[in-house]
Image 1 (cartoon, rainbow, N blue to C red):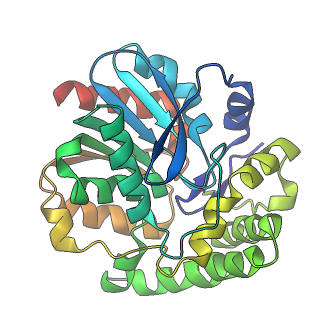
Image 2 (cartoon, rainbow, N blue to C red):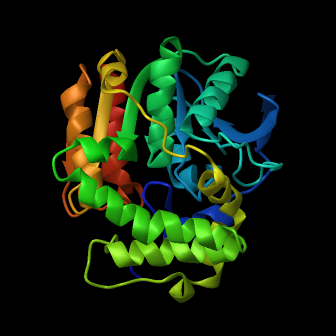
Image 3 (cartoon, rainbow, N blue to C red):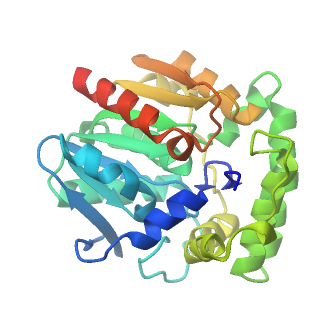
Length: 308
């Protein structure tokens, strides 16, 4: 089956990833309480710490295919952000955003006595990692970022205003209306909206209804995160250009050659702003690069870590 995505960086779960997630045992799962919430995480290996931050509608299980290889060289932690499976989810904060997640991540890193740590973020998780580096720079050894959705930049970038409007009208606003009715309606609206955007990088259009049942279940498991974001007063908080230009942590940008145009525009701006970065554009990859090309992404990440 063709790979598929359910929201700009806010989510990417492929059928093969779903199988890996379902196979993940719970024996090694731990939890820690920070900032009034309980976060579940996996912790494998020894040495310099690496923290893996998942994208939207995902959870710690999305990193399971990478855990064994990474933990052979590093202490590797994969955790679930506050509204993601299997964390207990209370009423969503009205101000929930990547900033809240970044402060949660900072508290987790301190609680586990990890700093400074390599941080690997995908999609909305990469957005979280950027805010971590801005707000808590002493905790970050390096960053590996896969297409963070810094959407507030788009209206200021050449050609970005139309892309921003298209995303909001086809994905974000329909998702918000859907979540007001229920979790499945919200996820379905988001997935179908990405189908309208042509997110898969091919001419084949996908829909939520066409997904295998096990994939739909995984999305619904993590629907509270997107419900909280669509209800938030500022789901995509501003990240000033000047703040990014002051990030000192070495940064690797991983971009998909066939990703949405808005992701490429944001990554180009990050490349211009970050003072100590390198960028790899993965041929024939979309926003789902870690699932499409897991070995290439891992090898690039390990080579980057070895230098820092």
